[in-house]
Image 1: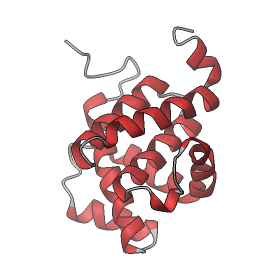
Image 2: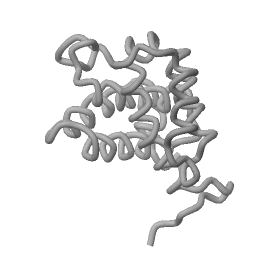
Image 3: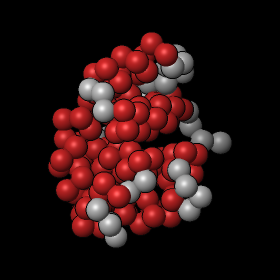
Image 4: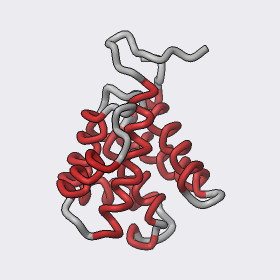
Length: 153
């Protein structure tokens, strides 16, 4: 049975739910054109956030908003098309995972990729998860090279 909490007290299920809500919020931000602060407020008031790690959800959204250019530039070399041409759900997942790979070293890269693949399976196109997995695997090899080469370190 998988543990539901990390030794530091982080609720892993609540964090997964925060990521799923974040994908939805990033999608809304991308297609709606609203400011990220408005999207965060909307989700806090309209979505069931009790079961999600709200602090992590907000960190993801604010971090993506602050670093979107850096994140897009990071995974762009591993795409087969322009960032703007990526399906909006897959683009949302890539941005979320890229943020975690770059700015959340407390989250193992394998967890980042697994959570991104699962979110894509849930919300994305039928085979989108394989594309996401390939892009993020190459991004992790670049941005988390030490951890990638020696994941047990």
